[in-house]
Every structure is written in C-alpha cells, then in structure tokens.
Length: 345
Image: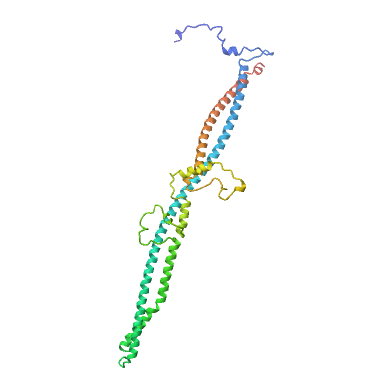
C-alpha cells in the first residue's frame, strides 16, 4: 500500500491555522512567549466565575432539597400516624357496634326475664293464696271436731293423727312464704335494674317492634324517640363521636369543613367564646374524611412533586459544576505547563 502513495513535499504554510493565529502575540520584554497561554488564561477567567456560580447554585439547591426532604418526611410521618389512628378507630367502631348490638339483646332478654319472674311471682302468690285457703279449711275442720267432742276421736290416733301430720306439713309450707316472696321480689328488682342500666327504653309489648334475631346495620337507631339512659346510651355516644356510621366515600362533610377552614375568621379578644376559640387543626372523625388528613396528603404530594423538580435541577447543576471544574483544572494545568516565564529560564 505504501508504494501506491506518492511522497509530496509538505506545504510551507502548513502551520498557518487558528492555533498559530492565537499565538501571534507581541513578545514580552524578555523576548519569551508561549503559544495559546494567554488565550487559556482568558478562558480561565471566564470559566472560574462560572464554576463558582455553579457551586453556589448547587449549594442553594442542596439546602432546599434538604429542607423539603425533612418537611416531606414529617408530613409522611404525620400521615402514617393518621392512617394508624384511622385503623384503630375502625377497630374501636367494630367493638362499639358489637357491644351496642349485644346490649340490645341483653336488654331484650332482661325484659323477658323480668316478665317471666313477674309471671312466676304471680304463680307463687297464687300457690300461697291456695295454701291460706287450705289452712282456713283445716282450722274450720279442727273447730268442728272440737265442738263435736266425740269420744271416739282420740288425739294422736286415727284421723286426728293424720290431721296433725298434715298441719305440720302445711305450717312448713307457710313458713317458706316470706323467704320465697322476698327472693322473688329481689329477682324482679335486679331484672329491672339490669334492664334500666342497659337502657331505659320501654320493653316491647308484643307488637314485634324488636327482633333480636335480625341483623343490626345501625345499632344505635333504637335510641330515637326521646331521652334514654344506660350503658347503651353511653356506647352510642362514643359510637356517634367516632362517626362509625359515616362512609369514608362520603366526602360531603369533609368538603363542608374544608370550606369553613378556608374562610377567613378574625375574632377579637372580647368576642372570644368557648365555641369560637378553637385550636387548629380541628380534628374530627371519621379520619378518612377529616379535612386535616386531606390537607396533609396534599402537602405531602406538593412536597414530593417539588422535591422531584429540585432534584432534577440539582443534578443538572452538579453536572454543569463538574464539567466546569474539569475545564478549570485542565486550564490550570495547561497554563502552568506552558508558563513562558518558567519555560524560558
């Protein structure tokens, strides 16, 4: 292949290019000069401030990223706590609903128990009424025997012996009356106390107004129709305070609270009442529809988007900074290597 190439003398103006042009400087007093050294110094004067400007901008962006990252982490932590509280409140609602439903059944059973004890009381009272009538008949029979004064009727023998044994058993039955009636009255009292302690709602009168076997999607609906007291009322107060019947997909309440929170309210000290001086944020259940939770979610989303934007900008500035640094270092090394004062000694 070398034989196919014809040797040609080099052009006498081969070095007349831009590099040579940049080196056409006026010699210094000492007669020493270096090609492009002055041009590199001029370039270094441009690169150096650009590099330090990139360093400053990178530091500012890094400070913003650190601040937004910390704030985003706090928002995320708050949101995690709210989510945990929402899960716990759902569990509390389940337990409250279970207690409310079971309390209705216990209340219904206590009503039936009180009714059954009252029926039993009536039956026992009737037994003792019948026993009292038998005692009257026995006394009348004994009075008749005493008046007849028949010598064949010997005390402790024959029919009189049987009558005496019958009287002993009758007296034994009558002696139990006070204790039994006292016990059954106490049972009626306790049954009614149990019922009233669960709920002072009137017992069903057989019209089928309450069926304990039916499901109870709204366990506190039985409290409608006037003031009621008892553990069922307390449970339902908590049930309503946790807004357990409110669906998380129902955002009407949350939107209404959001409008109220966005409205500007300025109160003077003299006009400050208990119903106006609220601590913000106002926290209410259910948490899923709570305005504060929605605001934290929006703050977190905003910081995440802003952080992504800042991170992209920071990465671009870092690339530019490293590029300028490499250029600056290269120019510094080249200028030091081609310094005329050092090379012409």
